[in-house]
Image (tube, rainbow, N blue to C red):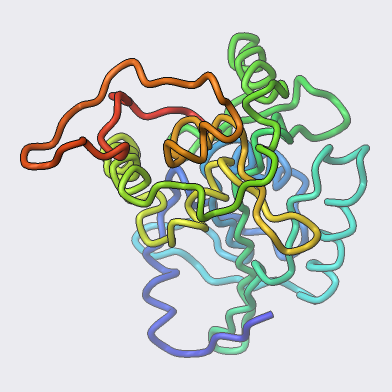
Amino acid sequence: MQIVQGEKDRTFFETLKEDCSTEIKKSKFLPKDLWETYSAFSNTNGGTIYLGIKENSPKNIILGVENPRKVIDDFIVTCRNPSKVNYDNSNEENITLINIDGKTILQIDIEEAPLSKKPVFCGGNIENSFIRKGSADLKMTNDELRATFRNAKPDMDSLSAPNTSLDDLDSPTINRYRKKFNQQYPNRFESLSDTDFLIRIGAIYLQKNNTYAIKRGTLLFLGKYQSIKKVYPHFHLDYFNRISGQDPPPFASRRFLRVHSFF
């Protein structure tokens, strides 16, 4: 855990407001309603929970948490209890203790869960699946639950492509895809490397032997032409979108016109 100390942090916390990725809770202990937010952040785009701050006008009140180590331990143990939450999304590296004038604020960063683990729900009841909209944790509708299950269902595209590596992916195509992605989801993953970006959207994953597995759908969408042909010998392009001055046109400029959903 990281211990952060400094007077400059007080202003930040006194003016902090809840939004789609920020939740403030005044509890000095681990609050029961934290798990709705845990579910919502896990099912949406991730976010940060701050414990020990009371929303107030014109300035929030810094209350701090009592016995931070116990609160952290309770959080981690509860995350591993399937009767409380169905997916352990805890990571002690994502927990920060911030000391303000002798009072400790607990910052818990919740990452978005992998597609295959959604929906994340609490209380052992799938109806307690939440998503984040604005500053609110809202129960998923039946349509949203069905869509989540449909997207998480394994299919051929989600299986790893045999005998492939990151070298089989086409960098210019990835760059083009990322530009389209950033237009649709601004400020989401722009700071990540290409490898970390592909992991976060579920296009590749790290195996136990520390090599990266490339999903079949990823290879078809972002792979080099010859690499695709090795796995799919009968593969052919519908058409190339030529770039002026280059002949034959690079595979990087092929037919994909919209952001493909890996996640």
